[in-house]
Structure formats: structure tokens, C-alpha cells
Image 1 (tube, rainbow, N blue to C red):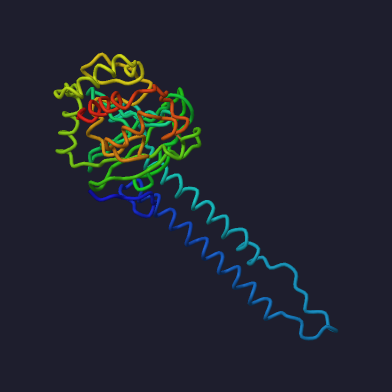
Image 2 (image 1 turned 120 degrees about the vertical axis):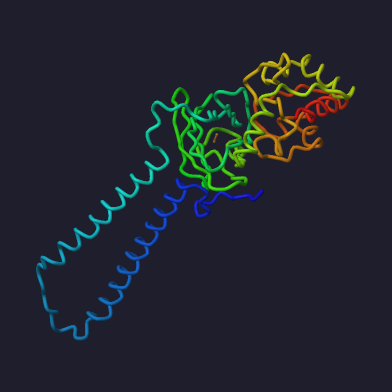
Length: 312
Ligand code: CUA
């Protein structure tokens, strides 16, 4: 899958294309003004430099046309850009009343939760969306102010506790789109990365169905030990694993954890070695994270890793 970096110039949706055009408009207008002002300054300095210090230069006062131009042109530019900006904003934030969101994304310190209304699919950090369809995203926060921003897909939107904000997005083509939290939200703000996985409708529906099912029951003995440990060590107080007693909502849903490419909101690849490091000492891997240190022995860590890895 193609990876689109965090650039507004690689627009991957009509909403982002609007923003890109507006940005080009601003840059061109700013360059035109810069060259005009610098050009005129150089011209005036050369043309009207003192050739003879004894004589006072010719004095002129008042020039109606020039004055109207000096006020009128900047005014027209400001008014023009004002309406252009309003138009751009309304492309990503049109009326959404009477419409149910297609996805509800909640910012947490420091991870993303996505639920898909009408299904019991839940995703954490890797957010799957279909291409070619206008999607209404509802954006909330569970704790402090976060900000959703995937530059290639459109504008930013604050996620404010107690407030529901909305954004529309129509993704042009499949691929992975990167973004990040864009409002300082604490120690791990920089590691609150977004990964949007845009899929063709067919693949998306398949993913959705797969993710509504309960978690795999572990078959090998090591993973089974891990499952027992998971329950005993009170991991289930904070994490949910559908189909088991784990119903916590404080931390990411782990039902299909093994199918994710990255872990810890994009901090590292989802490999057994990394899960091992994380479980051994969470605060060393991601300081400030709300995951406490449980002081698991190496055997326990190995069992938990085996259990988590097979949750697909
Ligand atoms: Cu969440 Cu910054």
C-alpha cells in the first residue's frame, strides 16, 4: 500500500485539494506582493536618488488614483481570501445535522480509539476507512484537548472533552495516510501518530466483518498461560478483548491487536520483541504512558506476548 506522508501538497481527498488550492493562492499572492514591494523600492531608490544635494526635489501632494489603489487592492485581496477560506472550510465541515457519523474517533492520552456505529467493530490507532465515499467523522476526546490532523486528507479539527466535532472526508485512493495529534496534550503528544488505512469498499467491509468477531481463543499452551495471566494481572480493568471478560475502556481495545502493523500509536512495529520490551518496562519505552509497570518475570512476559500476538 502506498504511504502518503504528512504533506498538504499530496492531497488525497477533495477536502484536502481545496486546502491545497487555497495555500497555493496565498503563496502566489504573497510572492506577487513581495516582488512588487521590493521591485518598487529598488526602482525608487535608483530613480530618485539625490543627484544634486543643493536643490530640493520636486514635491508632489495627493494622488487620488494611487490612494484608491493602495487601499482598494489590499482590501479586495483580503475580502477575496476571506470568502475563499470560508468556501474551503465549508468543504470539510458542511452541515451534518440529521446525519449519523460513519466513524467516531476519540482521542486519549496517548492513543486513538475508533468505533464504527452500527457495528461492534473497534479499532485503536490504525483507523480503517473506505475510499470513494463521503464519510462523516465524529471527533471527541476522553481527557484533554487533542487535535485530529491527517494533512493529505483535509483540515485539522480539535477534539475537546464534552464537545462533538465533525469533519467530512472523501478519500480518493487506497493507501496509508499518516497524521499526528496537532494539539499539545502532554508528555507523549509527539508519539500520538495517526495511521489511516484507506481500503476499497470490498476490502473495508471484509475488515469490518472480521473486526466485529470476538477474539481468537488461544490454542497453544504458552498463549493460554498468557490469557490466564492477562485476567489475573488485572489487564482487563483497562483493556477490552471482545469475547472474554476483559471489558476495560481506559486503554486501547486489544481484540485484534495481533493484526495491527504498529503498536503504541506508531512508536514501534508490532513485533514480539517490542511487545516484550513494552511489557517488561512500559515507562522506559513510552514515559508518561498510563500503562503501569506490573513487574512481570521474563516467562510471564513471554506468555503474555504469545497471547497478544495471536489476537487477530
Ligand atoms: Cu493528543 Cu497531542
